[in-house]
Image 1 (cartoon, helix red, strand yellow):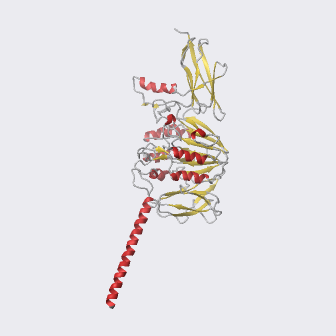
Image 2 (tube, one colour; image 1 turned 180 degrees about the vertical axis):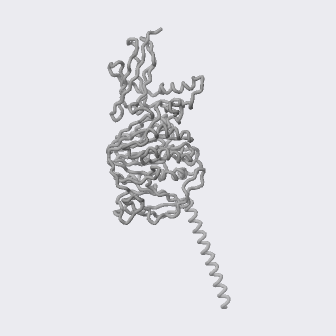
Image 3 (tube, one colour; image 1 turned 90 degrees about the vertical axis):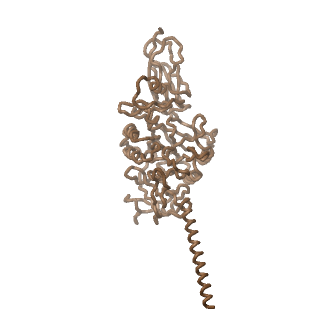
Length: 545
């Protein structure tokens, strides 16, 4: 009997052991699958602190900072009275501090702000271009140091649109034609590039970073549709290489009385057919914007920056309607807003009011910034061997300045290689027949203009007359393109793109009833901020043959 009992007990023990091992295997498998999917969650905790000695570590005498926002890219929480926070994290998260006004963050050797911690224990999925290496376990205390800094409410930010070099030669064009002009710039606290940092070859991220480093100021970046991992099968994996170089693709920070939100607004693959890309946001991204703004004072100016503009001209459906609608609903509670975009390789000012679904009396302004690469480094070469690269709407390549004063702003555009006063291109025939009616006209491309702006002209110091806003191609740009098509010898460089309608073009008639000889044209343009710009040109009247 005893032998049977022992045998039976051994069998029971064996069965229990096998069940236990099976449970462990099942549990391990579930944990593994959760890790792969990025849904296994834990908590990150630590302090936001005053980094007095700027060593990046919280020392015992460095106090925590209360009421500072920290995010995992979706949730946003604030630190307690001791500067402590706790926030959920998965196995694919970037935790970051939202820099408050009156503080700065350390930058690395390339002037890139270090305000984040990447948590990818398993690293990025295998891809053509490498992403983030495995990061291991979370630190026991994940701390973010802030450095007290005097921040004036009146300041200026430097903005680059689409550097977009496809090779090292174009990196050099960007470095010589744009960066060299602003190298060592003073009294600019930071810069921002609006996506398409490179042109599909993500190995160019590092040369791009080295080029922009020479500007000499902290530099923020955002992701464009040419900065993605094109072998990604899900949108949230399309920024793995970008994250390895630049950190989070969605983040926020404060400066003065301005709250900046920087977003990746490219859905890839396009959720409609899984081909190409579409402008828009995932739900978690819109949740981040909403959660972030719940903690932002309504008297602040909210500046949002992304790559693809909210609307495209000519009715092109390039941005998902429901995402724009939710965004507008979130922003409508804030009286002071501005968005910045690039992508189009033209320049325009867009205004969204109730007709476009923005439920606020004051329309929302989006400035679609002209690009540093212009028309993709095309056109004739200048005296330094750099493509002039005028954009298809007649805007020369260049960069922008946004001037902030409290919660108000003004915009400026600087044409590369020209003085600051060059804000318009005047096109007029060189010679016109005296006394004959002509369909030729005086055209003014006011690069920063929009339909509601006032543009006046006068001839020989006569009476000022209004010019008529016109939606047509810029004849000065048409001339550049025609030169390529009519030449009998190849021109160094690459033919410019075909012209498109400009959103900042005005026309005036040419008086032909004046004396023969040269006549001076003066143009005066007033932008939406009341700033006045001037330009001059001339034409000659001759007796008809």
